[in-house]
Length: 319
Image (cartoon, rainbow, N blue to C red; front, side, top):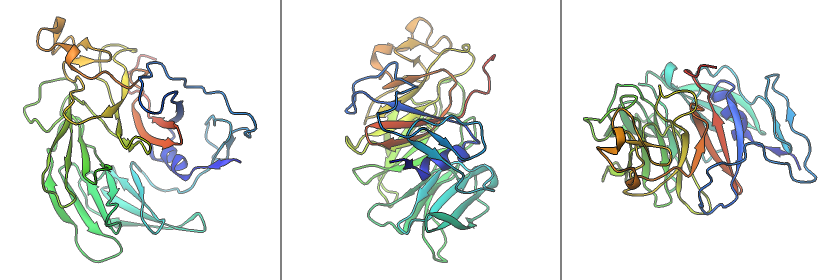
């Protein structure tokens, strides 16, 4: 049977027709995959991939892709509410848009939250699904759905600098996790909240560091089998076309993932850790999956035992 995956359709729109790639994981429970297959062989009996978008996309066999919603300039993150409607953040527009869905189709769309500061991450509390949590550049707030109640600020976040998108996800432990990108390409941060993933209770209390050494983990996904958080990681710039790799990491409490001192499988950074003089890279966590340098992975989703990864593509490759 052909798989109709709405989430995949909107991911493509959200990253301005970026490339969606299936990475088939041979060991779902977490053995390292240094060179995952990016062109999986189709299973017997699946239909050929079908592209109904009019865009130059190559679709894996067994999948169909079509345009679900349009006129969503700078769409970035998205989340379905308990009523089956879709909420989309649009950072450059400063809005969060509600797409009402009827009979599997986008019926209406409206900018519900306006005049926001680079809104990005969206998440729904699994215990209180009528609450939408959203992250702006400088704070995390929550708001009851379909009401006139104003947003309630929960915590402040560092603002400014190079990476300003904040992503959200609820973990299996019912805590809310937020990724906070670095202020720079490669540097030792003065604000220790930068280059990390923090967690907190749903009411904003107990806001604390969960993992560090993460230059810019723009998107996260919860592995439905292991209940671990997987996250993308954007490697530093200006080391050439093929290093350092971009990454997918399994995020574990108290672990250090290398930035700004190390990249890839423990290579010392030439600017902040030349010859390993500042930090022994054996003490950092190597990536679960290494991706082509400058791929800019901007979306993750689990589909059975497989991981869907969307690529934005490079701004600074030579070709």
